[in-house]
Length: 475
Image 1 (tube, rainbow, N blue to C red):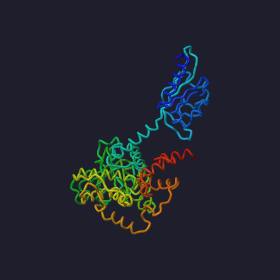
Image 2: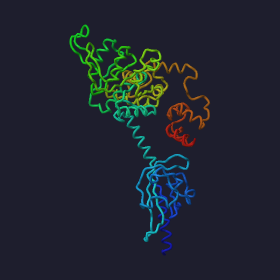
Image 3: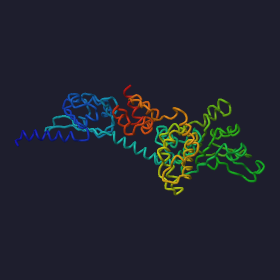
Image 4: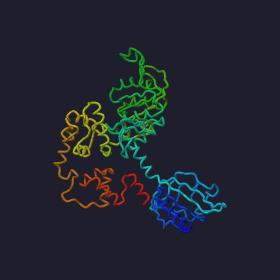
């Protein structure tokens, strides 16, 4: 093999190696014109080699080009002052308009006499890594271990917002108002806020404001001195003082009488209390978290709840979604409760039938997560196999199934003549089913795999977040 043939073979071999690399690689000549563009760059950027060759790197619209937008003039690029760039995470603009997270690095290439030959840049796509991070976070949520949130289970968008709100609340000392229907887990959220805060090593004291009369609640919260009223035979410390240094959780705050509302307002303003029967003021250092299933703003409008107290309480409100609005979390919750009941009872129940899952998804859950947990506990009493069946469920859920079957058109089952699935109808179904591919498949009578193939065919992203992002880019 002569030298010319060897050089040609060597050049082809190097080109094949560069094209086989997972990272994007491209080069620019001394004038900043792109002179080579490997296959991975085509995949990452969306631009083919034919489209990129002869252009400048400005087509990538890099978000971090030495801290400034790309000058599109190779002679003005700061890389020539330092001959290399440190690997940095940034975003490139894909040909279709959306951002791609990457790690980019660049080096100046000179000959043996120090004359500039060009620049070589490498681009590492972080899309799969970011998706893996997201899957890992969702897996942690399934296990209830995300930020040590214990028994708060969920991966829906609504619950992710709750998790982030808890994290933000735990990092501050603001007064928190947790709102949500009965059974949505308000006490769990209050506990998560406390045990992830700087007060986690101190007490968290819980008081149900609807369980006691006004007189008893006043004594419970503020304490009393001996002789304050009949039966007060000794001094008694109140729950506010007991929680000093820690957190007090006031559940069902909407049930407070006008008198207790006034006294609580003073605690919020002054951070001090007076025991019943005593005029001495006592300073307290507490974090106050409250919860209610009622519409406090409506109570303010009706004149039954103080407006100034309402705004003091809702410094940082957290709204818990009802279970009917996050049904995609039901399979995770069911799995969690089955595991918990298996450990508690010793029964070898590992799953539910498909009919049970469907019944759970069709039910409205007025009692929310607490009702679901009770339904699983009920089924454990009756179940004599390794799988929960319809006959093991509480009567109200089974009655819901019978009622739905007896009402024409009430169940969204497979029609006798299936309508042709279109991209628009699939998008509508995905929105209606909170982007649960399994639920969409059930409604149209197709397999989960078929739905996934249709989404791939019509370039529909697999998650709601990705769809929103794509919609924003294409506006």
